[in-house]
Amino acid sequence: MSDPTQTARRKVLVIGAATLAGGALTACGGGGDGGSAATGEPNGAATPPPGSAPADAPSAGGAAAGTKSIAKAADVPVGGGKVLKEEKLVVTQPTAGSFRCFTAVCPHQGCLVSKVADNTINCACHNSEFKATDGSKISGPATKGLAEKKITVSADGSITLA
Image 1 (tube, rainbow, N blue to C red):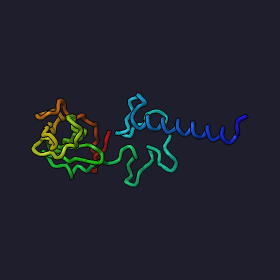
Image 2 (cartoon, helix red, strand yellow; image 1 turned 90 degrees about the horizontal axis):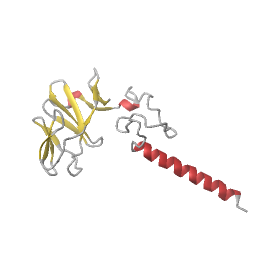
Image 3 (tube, one colour; image 1 turned 90 degrees about the vertical axis):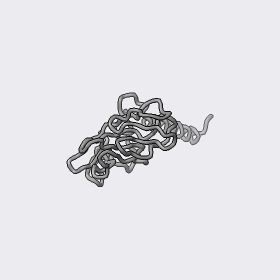
Image 4 (cartoon, helix red, strand yellow; image 1 turned 30 degrees about the vertical axis):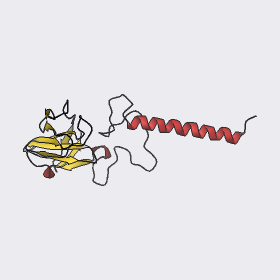
């Protein structure tokens, strides 16, 4: 006959493992429902961990958690851009008032792009260059351009992922 304590312990371990596996799939966008962890959109019916705010709860800055500001328009020079290392994004302003956002991960070997100057996004690892207007490849060993991310710029100049 089995020990009830061992049976209860097994159930807890199995449920815990299933919960962790489900959370990992959700975080990686495995839901396949069009949601994205990068944009803060929900992927399935995942529940936030205890003590965390729901995605639509206001953050300290007053914006919804899924619309956290990634940059300020004033910090993105015209004809240049700003590399956001932690977010692995690059925000550009090809012409005054026109902002674009791309992944900062170079498709060649995964290095982060290093700077934006003269409407060109540069990867210092192997000298790939991309257009600041659309992320397309200009030169270098990269075989394709940078993937675009949708953003919005609010009246106060906050740039958020859409």
